[in-house]
Structure formats: structure tokens, C-alpha cells
Length: 235
Ligand SMILES: Nc1ncnc2c1ncn2[C@@H]1O[C@H](COP(=O)(O)OP(=O)(O)O)[C@@H](O)[C@H]1O
Ligand SMILES: [Mg+2]
Image (cartoon, rainbow, N blue to C red; front, side):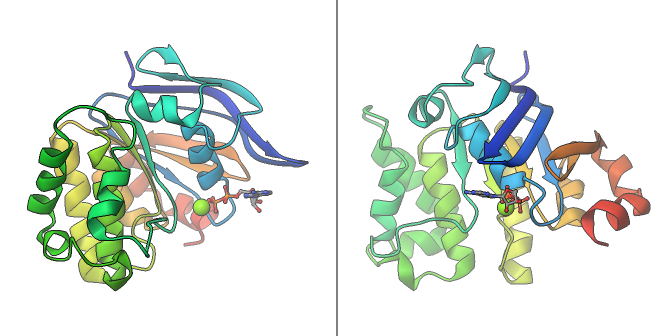
């Protein structure tokens, strides 16, 4: 059974059809990337998948269950976690409280242990746990956003342009982290404008143009296709 299986998903804002009958799948433990130029519909697709916007049509199966019209919290509870574009952390709250937000739907006794595991993974966050998140660098804020998602114990994490605005050093660390999380068994749906690095870590990819999937296939095949990068991704 696929972890995520999407069939003919559409997202419409007023008259603007941002996502047009997109079909894609993520297998358990797989990294899949969604590529496309600005405005192609990548963020709208992820918002539809997470239930932040109501799909106009299509079907979303997560672990075999139909969540097409389930609310966002139910999807989070079942293990689907979006790390939104622009990170969306709470800058006036402490690092620690940001991480606890990731556990808002949990009521088990292991939350503190899981937050500590985030500090083990990201020592920079541990050292700043009592500081406001506003003191963090862009790279650290991205780690915090991912850490917050991990505290929700997802089986699928959806990352919306996580490398945007990061220094080359942090971009490298971010992709190392993505590979590491995947080795630990997490399914990852990665939206990126950094086409080269995304295709390097992913096993498969989809290319969106004007809301439609115009190309899909093995990441190494897509990566070797220079015409593709020219035509759909602006070089
Ligand atoms: N909240 C919104 N209301 C109306 N149109 C939107 C909204 N969000 C995005 N759009 C439009 O939907 C299309 C896809 O946008 P988006 O999903 O943000 O693309 P991408 O993430 O690939 O840059 C664009 O034409 C954009 O202007
Ligand atoms: Mg976007």
C-alpha cells in the first residue's frame, strides 16, 4: 500500500485553477520531489494535501484511508505533517514552546523525550531552547520548523521549499538531514526550486506547470534531462 496516493486532485481559488487533476504517490520510506517554476501550484498542492484548503475534486488516500475531506488536524493525527513555505514558526515564542506546538495533538507521556531528541539532533536549538525563536538564523529557523513537525511523529513530512533563503552551508546540512530522516523510515514529499539537489536525494519526481503534472519519472532520469530543466524550470 502506498503511503500517499493522490488521484486527480484539484485546488481552485475563485476562478484560478491552481492545481489541475494532479495524481502522484509516495511509497513508504520514499523521497519524492515536486518541481516547478514560481506559481506552478506547488504550495497549493501541499495545502490541498494537508487539508489547509479544501480540494475542488479528486481523492487523497493516506495509508489507505480516504482523507480527501478530512480536516487538517485529523491528517496530522494520522501522521501527515506539512512544513510550510517560509517556515511559519512563532518568533515571539521560545524555541522550546515552538517545539511543543508540534505536539499539540498528542496526549501521551513521551513528548518531553521526543523534544529532547530534537535537541540531540540540533544542538544549536538545545542551546537556545529558552530564547525567543526570533534570535535564530534562517537556517536554524528551518531546523526548528522541521523539528516542530517531527515532534508530531509523522510518517510523511511535506517540505515546502525548505532551502529557500538559506546559506549554502545550511542548504547542505538541510539535504543531509532530509537523507537522514529518510533513512530512519520517514516518507518525504519535497517541494523545491533547488532542482539539482532535490533530484539528487529523491527517488522520483513530478514537474508541475500551470497546476498540471507535465513530467514525472525516476529522479536520475529527470536530472539527466537538460531540456526539462530549460523548459519547465527556467534553466
Ligand atoms: N490564496 C490564494 N488565492 C488566490 N490565488 C492564489 C492563492 N494562492 C496561490 N494562488 C495562485 O495559485 C497559483 C499557484 O500558486 P502557488 O501554489 O503558490 O504556486 P507555487 O508554490 O508553485 O509558487 C498562482 O497563480 C497563484 O497566484
Ligand atoms: Mg510555493
